[in-house]
Length: 411
Image (cartoon, rainbow, N blue to C red; front, side):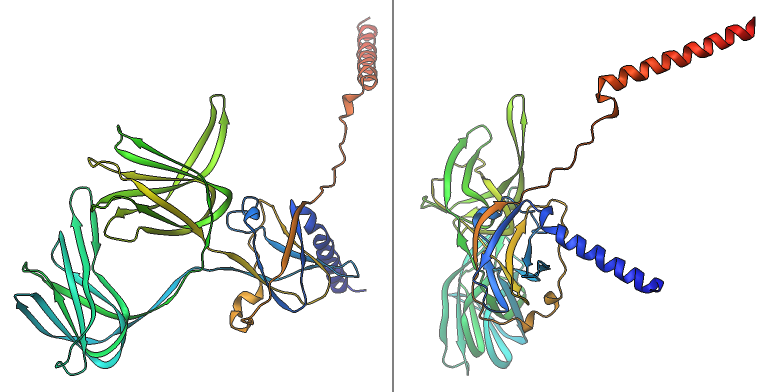
């Protein structure tokens, strides 16, 4: 057997040994049932998120074949986030006019194509105007697409807010006419016409198990404390106020990152995940990166205004699914709970277009703690008192011998 063959054999042995030991490196395992095809999907349950790494680097699917071989199953983590694809439409502004109704702007498209969004870049600040949008094929017959659509700009020492994007059902006209219903000066610096194709996000509701609302008069804010049933990946929070007047308040959303027990009790460390505006001018749906936590805070800065009555709060998150490929029959487990685990890198991530669309779901059984082998404890050499006394007697005898020898030499 030459050196090359020996090296290959040794490498195969080491990899095999490592694979057999991998399952034991994790803290939890859940048996998987329902495997009857090559491709399947597996929805992660709520109870799992508190025990996995924040970036899901420790998720693994292992299988044990009839021959006791250990297999690692490749998977993709699928999170149902939204996406938007925009197609810019070329056009010319062919008319600007002022009448008793307001300012008119007429757009002519180069080609008759569909649009559903218009962005207006206006020079003016601090306005609250209504808009009417119409469409026509010949500039003779005009059809209303949107009316009394509100655009707003607030710019002062405590706020900088602007909403000048028109969203409307997809329309297909050669000409579009925009009426800004105001007698004030309106300067259109630029406009953008787009066809926005949205892939909506998938959400599942995570019920709030505990909610406390506190008014801090000294700091002039409203503190909303939320606690969920489990630590789950939250990415959506909607707040509805009961007040029927217009309002505009800065807002901060925080999540509990960690906690430390001290002599004075528990100390909680919250981190900000989102800053926004809580306003009567919008739907007040706040979206942010999926973040795992059980406790959340919402701070509404009232400034010199009276506190708002909160009517309802809704919390949601994206469902997390594993899309996995099973190439051999066997007994399979989902394992997790390994702080030092690295993110896996599987080939199927580069061939997503070849994954079937219709996938049957697998069943994940209750989590089981993976038992750890007790490491043999090596007792200290000097733990036995007899060894210690024996050593001391030996040292005394050696020292006595050297002393007697030195005395003889001196005589």
